[in-house]
Image 1 (tube, helix red, strand yellow):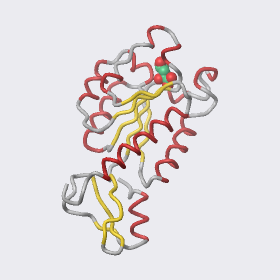
Image 2 (cartoon, helix red, strand yellow):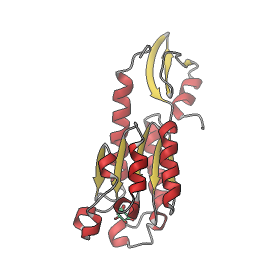
Image 3 (tube, rainbow, N blue to C red):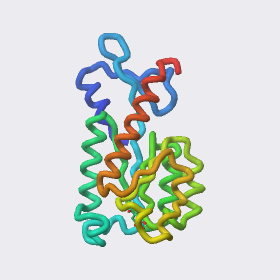
Image 4 (cartoon, helix red, strand yellow):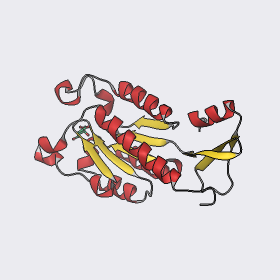
Amino acid sequence: MACPAVWQYAEQCSFQEAHPGFSEGWGCFYFQGKIAAFVPMKPIFILNGPNLNLIGEREPEIYGAGTLADIEEGLRKQASAAGLEIDFRQTNHEGVLVDWIQEARHAASALILNAGAYTHTSVAVLDALRSLSAPIAEVHLSNIFKREPFRHRSYVSPASTGVICGFGAQSYRLALAAMIEILESSAATRGPHA
Ligand code: DQA
């Protein structure tokens, strides 16, 4: 994994130190001998399912004119302003999505998931999500409850911490803001010996 922005900052200020008392995946850095911040060392996974590679071209009246690359760029800036990293991916294949969700069990501090059409069909995605202990945000560009009845059912929601839909690209930004707050407040409640 690349060095998260917060550690680069810490290195520049030359007070970086990993605290041995932290749980795996958490770290802190010091300023003038005192702990200045607690930071999750794992990236936030942002996973996208089928056909989301086509947004910008596909049904722009529903999904907007922006591309997935535009969304990724905005989220990367938003995360880095909070000293965090994202791992942003898209796949058209259900099994690949399941593999990535399983990978998130150990490699992610949180998961933001737009499972596309698999939202409405995939018990395999639900089962994989249920194996995660990290917070999960389900996102959709469109308001799935305003659309065809088959989109009203989600196999992702029962395993998710929260659901955001209908705000276009902003659905992702809101989900990332929520995840950053959750991670920061859980870091703030951990002491060095937690
Ligand atoms: C979607 C909504 C799904 O119903 C649809 O199959 C998608 C995109 C959304 O972001 O609005 O592919 O997840």
